Amino acid sequence: MRDDAFKSTILALNPEELRELRRSRKESQAKFWKRFGVTQSRGSRFEQGIGLPTSVAILIKLYVEGKVNDGDLWRARRGAKLWRQIDTNTSQSYHG
Image 1 (cartoon, rainbow, N blue to C red):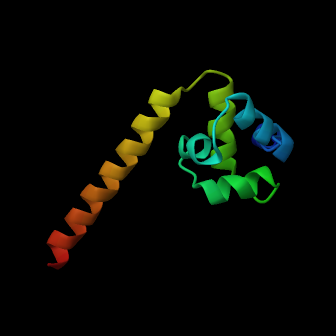
Image 2 (cartoon, one colour; image 1 turned 45 degrees about the horizontal axis):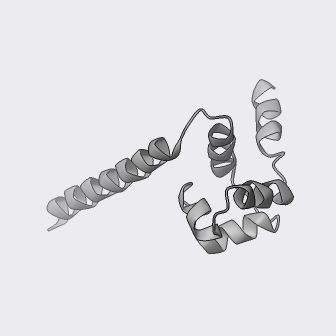
């Protein structure tokens, strides 16, 4: 049941808080949401209260709490892109 309590705490971010967090940083939606691997249009939907995924909510909480920073998030995105690229290249070599 501990997981349920954790999840409900994470998902407690409401649209107004998300919008205020971004505005307090004086950032555009594109710049703010890119940090979390989200497009501007999806970020706009989150700020309107439409479907914030748990994974993004967790990243935001960790970011706000200072447990991850811009560099951490950038490295994670870059690493994920590199792994996808390696996976694609490997798949093509087996099928090509």
